Length: 103
Image (cartoon, rainbow, N blue to C red; front, side, top):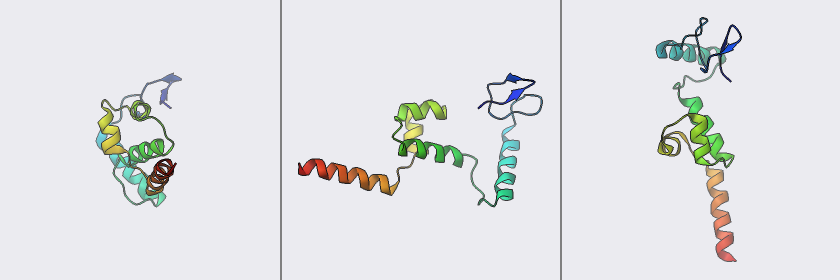
Protein backbone atom coordinates (compact mmCIF):
# COMPACT_ATOMS: atom_id res chain seq x y z
CA UNK A 1 0.00 0.00 0.00
CA UNK A 2 1.51 3.27 -1.10
CA UNK A 3 0.83 6.70 0.34
CA UNK A 4 -1.44 9.01 -1.58
CA UNK A 5 -1.32 12.77 -1.76
CA UNK A 6 -4.32 14.60 -3.18
CA UNK A 7 -5.63 11.29 -4.52
CA UNK A 8 -2.40 10.49 -6.37
CA UNK A 9 -0.31 7.45 -5.43
CA UNK A 10 3.23 8.50 -4.56
CA UNK A 11 5.00 5.15 -4.98
CA UNK A 12 6.27 5.62 -1.44
CA UNK A 13 5.08 3.88 1.72
CA UNK A 14 5.79 6.79 4.07
CA UNK A 15 5.52 10.43 3.07
CA UNK A 16 5.14 13.82 4.64
CA UNK A 17 1.79 15.61 4.31
CA UNK A 18 3.11 17.25 1.14
CA UNK A 19 4.07 13.89 -0.41
CA UNK A 20 7.82 14.17 0.06
CA UNK A 21 9.80 11.18 1.40
CA UNK A 22 10.09 11.07 5.19
CA UNK A 23 13.58 11.78 6.49
CA UNK A 24 15.11 8.61 8.03
CA UNK A 25 15.67 10.26 11.43
CA UNK A 26 12.01 11.33 11.56
CA UNK A 27 10.86 7.83 10.61
CA UNK A 28 13.01 6.32 13.38
CA UNK A 29 11.64 8.80 15.90
CA UNK A 30 8.03 8.10 14.84
CA UNK A 31 8.64 4.35 14.97
CA UNK A 32 10.15 4.60 18.47
CA UNK A 33 7.20 6.72 19.66
CA UNK A 34 4.69 4.29 18.16
CA UNK A 35 6.42 1.38 19.93
CA UNK A 36 6.32 3.26 23.24
CA UNK A 37 2.64 4.24 22.87
CA UNK A 38 1.59 0.69 22.01
CA UNK A 39 3.61 -0.90 24.81
CA UNK A 40 5.86 -2.73 22.36
CA UNK A 41 9.43 -3.12 23.55
CA UNK A 42 11.57 -0.60 21.69
CA UNK A 43 12.74 -2.26 18.57
CA UNK A 44 14.99 -1.47 15.66
CA UNK A 45 13.15 0.09 12.74
CA UNK A 46 14.03 -2.94 10.58
CA UNK A 47 12.36 -5.40 12.96
CA UNK A 48 9.06 -5.38 11.00
CA UNK A 49 11.00 -6.24 7.84
CA UNK A 50 12.67 -9.16 9.62
CA UNK A 51 9.29 -10.33 10.86
CA UNK A 52 7.83 -10.08 7.36
CA UNK A 53 10.75 -12.03 5.89
CA UNK A 54 10.45 -14.76 8.51
CA UNK A 55 6.68 -15.05 8.00
CA UNK A 56 7.16 -15.31 4.23
CA UNK A 57 9.68 -18.12 4.73
CA UNK A 58 7.28 -19.86 7.16
CA UNK A 59 4.59 -19.65 4.46
CA UNK A 60 6.97 -21.43 2.07
CA UNK A 61 7.18 -18.37 -0.18
CA UNK A 62 10.07 -18.79 -2.59
CA UNK A 63 13.06 -16.71 -1.41
CA UNK A 64 13.15 -14.79 -4.72
CA UNK A 65 9.53 -13.74 -4.24
CA UNK A 66 10.31 -12.67 -0.66
CA UNK A 67 13.28 -10.72 -2.03
CA UNK A 68 10.98 -8.82 -4.40
CA UNK A 69 8.41 -8.12 -1.69
CA UNK A 70 11.10 -6.77 0.63
CA UNK A 71 12.71 -4.84 -2.26
CA UNK A 72 16.18 -6.29 -1.69
CA UNK A 73 18.77 -6.16 -4.46
CA UNK A 74 20.44 -9.42 -3.46
CA UNK A 75 18.84 -12.67 -2.34
CA UNK A 76 21.57 -13.14 0.26
CA UNK A 77 20.28 -10.07 2.11
CA UNK A 78 16.84 -11.67 2.29
CA UNK A 79 18.00 -15.15 3.23
CA UNK A 80 21.05 -14.47 5.40
CA UNK A 81 20.13 -11.27 7.21
CA UNK A 82 16.37 -10.82 7.33
CA UNK A 83 14.79 -14.27 7.46
CA UNK A 84 14.79 -16.67 10.36
CA UNK A 85 13.45 -20.21 10.27
CA UNK A 86 11.46 -21.29 13.30
CA UNK A 87 12.46 -24.30 15.39
CA UNK A 88 9.09 -25.87 14.66
CA UNK A 89 9.64 -25.57 10.91
CA UNK A 90 13.14 -27.05 11.29
CA UNK A 91 11.78 -30.03 13.26
CA UNK A 92 9.00 -30.60 10.73
CA UNK A 93 11.49 -30.56 7.87
CA UNK A 94 13.86 -32.96 9.64
CA UNK A 95 10.92 -35.31 10.32
CA UNK A 96 10.00 -35.24 6.61
CA UNK A 97 13.60 -36.01 5.72
CA UNK A 98 13.70 -38.89 8.22
CA UNK A 99 10.42 -40.27 6.90
CA UNK A 100 11.77 -40.14 3.35
CA UNK A 101 15.00 -41.90 4.32
CA UNK A 102 13.05 -44.62 6.13
CA UNK A 103 11.03 -45.48 3.03
